[in-house]
Length: 68
Image (cartoon, rainbow, N blue to C red; front, side, top):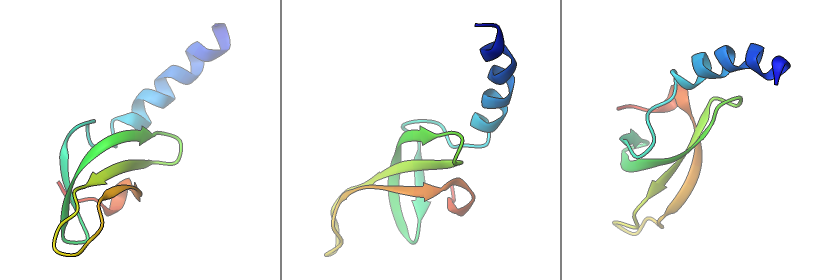
């Protein structure tokens, strides 16, 4: 476990840059909900409901492209 303890601080710092799980976000004009974090890639999976002819489902989105 000793080597993992050095990485923990880095993971926590990266995780702070991501929106919280289950938070509502906006992406490309649609509202969605964060369902997963991909910490090292700095992306999140966002679930969108089907609406206005747009399909529903989850997509992976770069964290810096999200609006809260």
